[in-house]
Length: 356
Image (cartoon, rainbow, N blue to C red; front, side, top):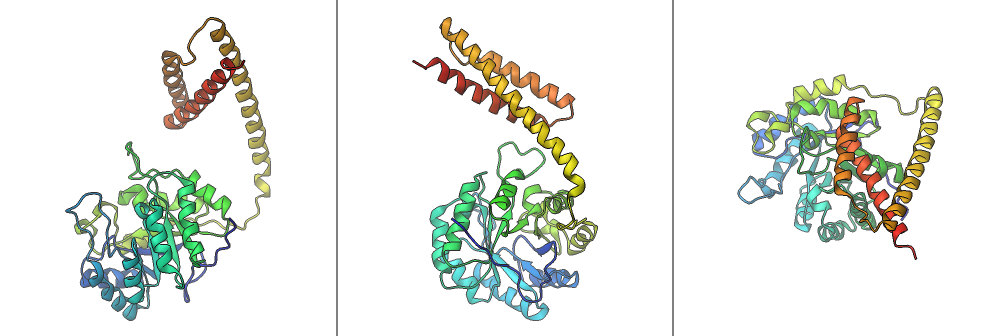
């Protein structure tokens, strides 16, 4: 499906990188909304985000103040001229947000993972004219993300942005949600004109990771950042560890290096040619390895051996991961590569053995 997106920029917002959307994880009180918003406006932020309805994994947590918080955003908009943005997950949310003049809607990761919920929101948006930002689903499924975008687009909303907030994982390690940058990069490859926004707050889960993640997003050509900022982050009612003060936000934005995307890349041509040559060599090596795998399959077939040799598989993963680490490569990267190689090797052996 061919989609032609329009700019999500609103009047008075300069078309430059990064587009900044900032505000607290949750609207907690009118005073908190106004204090944070005025501080952000003073720093030059034009779009204020605040959670009105908060999806929670388990019941009992703070689930947002609900509709009573929407007039607070109206007042902030009236007094500062800032645009407002809130998360919506149901038709009722869409109707209430638009009734109170919210300027931008975003759809969260849990909602994007549910096609029924996405269709309900799409139906509620028919005939409306409002920018909609769509976060990636919690699981690393690009097609599900694109499907959500398509549903909103088919409703007649063409001012669409995509928010990369990382992907959930049992193995948390450094990040709250794994970046898996290749997924939003592939989204941008398929839809070059879509507005791509990074959410370093949710990827990192820690305020000290916001700056490096923001810089990485800029280096990868993202158009904007959505960052959680609170007047008193340590005492925030939700996600306290990943929120920063408006003053800290300004320091981060001032230190960002935003490179011109239009600069000629001719000086990179020699290095890129080297990359192409190396990639060709890698493919040739893969092909050679699979030829050897088929020879192994012939031996196993002749001697009536089973294809999968678990001990050998474990030996390969352990040995290669350690060797990769010694070469300065990430262990998880090496493991992923060799898991894929082994899977293809097994597939080819099974195919060979089952030939008539």
